[in-house]
Image 1 (tube, helix red, strand yellow):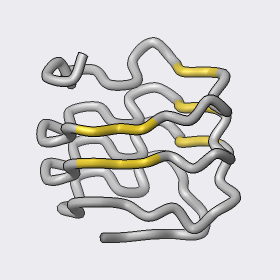
Image 2 (cartoon, helix red, strand yellow):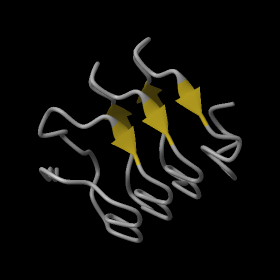
Image 3 (tube, helix red, strand yellow):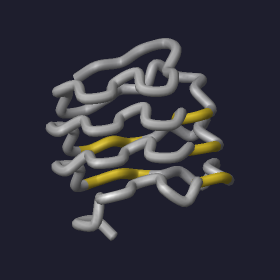
Image 4 (cartoon, rainbow, N blue to C red):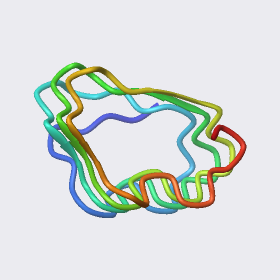
Length: 87
């Protein structure tokens, strides 16, 4: 499990965390933030998230659960490219 106060593009790219706990107050999941996190299995986005950018969870092959709150008002086209098991 990992958490960070400031998340940015590619922050967790290719890491091996199973879950991620948000520190609180984040409003955007940046592009490729969790890209190719091979072991990330589930994630719950906090109610403060308003936008999820391109490939935020791209190629997270073991991601089986993602909870997106109603506060999210923008999800880009390639949010979960190659994450077909869930879709």
